[in-house]
Length: 428
Image (cartoon, rainbow, N blue to C red):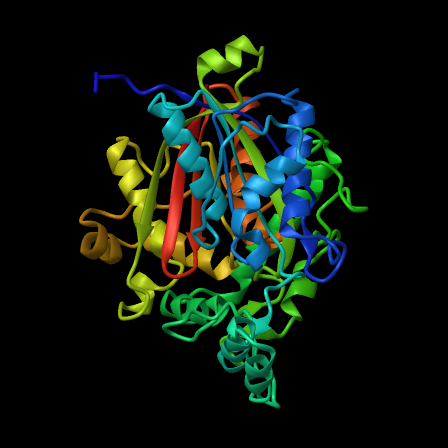
């Protein structure tokens, strides 16, 4: 192999459909129909119909058996050339972010010139299956060679049908993310008011962004929705303060408003090399500088330092070290609001001298300017379709950077099972 320099990776555009609360506007939709719609809007906006791209990477977390080739099937329903290869990826809530890293790395290495990273998720179409007792018996019925054998196997089908229903609970701790984060948040002394302030800002910033037309070239209407239907206008601190806890018991600080709700949706991001963009007259929005994945031992580790959603603390620190940057060297911070408590815990860890010395090996990273955090709304307002959140965040950040020449942004995405992905973007 000859020595090659890495190619710059440019964010050239993005598109998503409005995100919808589970069992609502998209009840009749599927991962495939939503992902096809997100791709279709991107194709139309950037005149990609009939074009063969280097690759399309996408995925979903909640998938039915029919979704085993989700990205390929969505591409086949689109107007992209069918000679464009696809790959499915999955890393819990970081799925969309990892799809972006996958395509970006291939462009950087010169393996492809262009690609799309995408993702979708629906909890309105869950993969409810039969439990092992019935499933195993049905397999034997199907495998029987004669009618008599089939009848004998069928006679042993259990009278009580057991179902295999998906759950967000971690398989090893049996805790749902909210319950686990409640433990971590309490360890960091995260208060109710701080969480509600993040939630209120998220909704206010998202509503302002829609009113300002910021999303006009980022969102394609779909199935009767033109805006995220989780967004709440006119929220007040008093209204938020009146809500009861939903995690952490009667004295908990996490509520339905400062925690994300189950959501359906899809997103897509167009990436390319400078040469590919120039050939097509596309103006770059931002450049992907670097990315980092991380994982923590959320099973046996200390919930304060290795809680299930604490991996971004370490991923971002590694990014800063490798790129010789400080936490304050950013104009925008896009921290995934899985729960406001998670955002608060992450920020508290970065600002804590003892934590940083013990776990990161240096002085505290310090605090960020909160006015630069999720300035066009975050997951608490938009909702959080697991596989689509990464594309939403990077698409939003890339446009923000394009509007401020010379700027830089940080992406931090926590994910289930103690994982994460973080990225740095800057002006192209």
